[in-house]
Image (cartoon, rainbow, N blue to C red; front, side, top):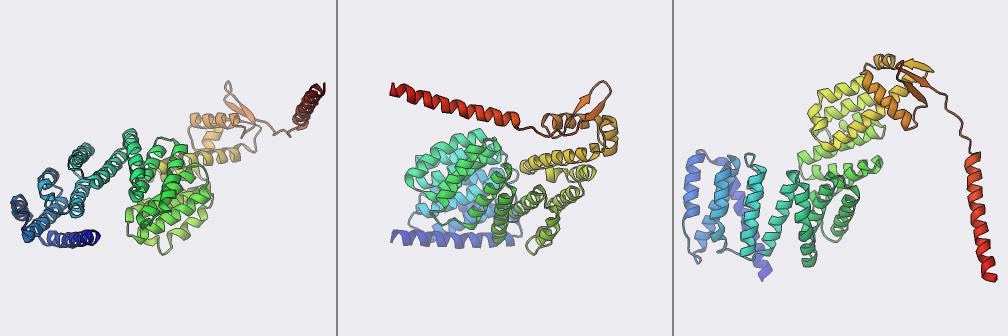
Length: 433
């Protein structure tokens, strides 16, 4: 009976939210509507007056919709404080849902600063602890972790995550546990701690396999898996995960996240040296509706990669600076791709020469002399290019690659094994004596 009552409360709350959205859309005079609704919200109601409680609940939802629509930060913050006594009059399930909706709307306000969002969330967590609303407190703590993650406060995020994971495991709340473990993986990834990021992701996927995982959460898991595989250089597996993430986000009409998945798909194709597949993917049925500068940037990089043109690659980076530099994941892989393309072009240019001026190489490639010299030095140290740089004359001397003589290494290996055999025989002989 208690479960049925809670379900009815939630269903009523969903209906009220839909009505509130409709009312917010059709308001002609927002200021007057806000004043009227504020008066209704502040009015006292008796705990036994069910119609009045329902009317006040509807007024709260409508007012929060209007504040959200018109980006009213201070007013929304005050509303969250004002409704706390009213939540005592409704069931915990209904009250928790109303409160979380208001928190979500406050977090989505564009004018609210990260500090305001974090402080508001902490204040609400303190209130939930005082009122012993455990499930609401946990949901708010998860929201706080997400706020730290969005604000690039990764150490604070991890500090809050550790005790929360222990508590969720103890209570066996697997739905929230998956979400928190995933955020832990993202925080470790941002701090370049890839082994711990991988461990947290494995834990999240293992937990997700034991419950029903909503499509959005499954898509986020796939996106994080693809990101980690791409970081490890396994681009083929990364592409598969990005494709799954793209389809998942597209199925729930999450346009921004789907666009990110598609962008990463195209990037991995370029990294796999399969840039020729990019036009076919972009012109596909699912990808057509996501056309824009982000996709154009990946197409430009794919074209430059196919042409093996450094100039085209640099032009693409310049033309689509925000699309390639704002996303740290894209930025890292694009930088690696540029270095790889530069090395390939340098090898192609110096191939006919045994001795050539660095300035001449730079003029052929239309690049800065210092940049070319730095890259050549790196290639020589890495063993990719056999030669030396003559700093006095500013020339590169290229040597013919020598055939590796394995005689010395094989002889050394034979002697090592012979030594092990002699040591074993000596041990056995000692035991017999």
